[in-house]
Image 1 (cartoon, rainbow, N blue to C red):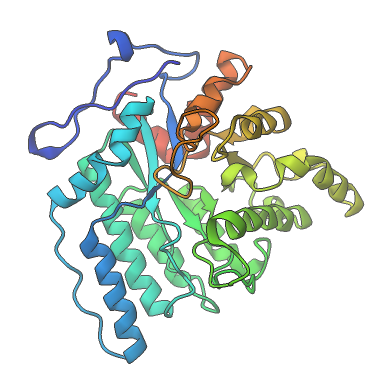
Image 2: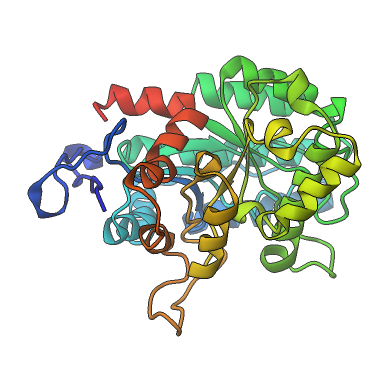
Length: 373
């Protein structure tokens, strides 16, 4: 499959761009640069001092003590945590660019209060910015938002603006359930969320609808909560007319869209019963699914049911599902293999791997073009 491997590490520890494909020849597909863009990556391997500070922050919150200063983390610590993990896998699997955000399960909006969440969000986003600065050809930043149960969205709007305008980020992760598994927040179509949507439209950035850790003992975080929340988000959108108010708003539902593609007929039927327009007309100019589905039959179903213009390549490595699939001998989360194996045209594959991401993340497209890609 055509791709452009990431470059070597140059002077000063910053990545340098490579233009040679495997075998020494760059390959292009119609309308694109032959890139493979992973829309779903998290910093799950952050340096130890970062995670230790979080433990200290939560301990201070519980006792009412002031937060300790955030530790100094050397570039070499960040570089090592990336080169031995995400960057190694990017190279091994033939990817080019990963949209990189803080670890989803560690956003933990249900812990602490608004002040805790704001401080934690800022240090996480600043850390992502440092990764992007060290490896500008391999990563682009996506921010977490300082959400908190029962709190307003003003801090989230301000942090989104900071991350886009100051740090150069290209998108955000929006938690539809900051309560951590009890779904007490208004549905995504409620006007509660409109100030954030307005800022997203103004900045021309999309959001990935992504919950965090579960504090509900009945919901395993990555096996139950994530998939349930993805599916619930889609149904909330189906029940309203959000994109009538925000026709240019773009939302990505991860993990292959939860259970939605498997039950596509159910949602088409529910749209009819609810006197809504067809799903394709109501939602699918604004809603997109990624390919974080960890077996070939699941990817086949996704590609058979959902129009390729609504599918963005994603892997979520190093993430929720690690290890080798004993049935294939390959890593579960090596999702490029599944896309390569689809019986689709080169143009459809190009849309999934590159072109859709450029369209859904306009600031990413600008960033790549500035790099000559």
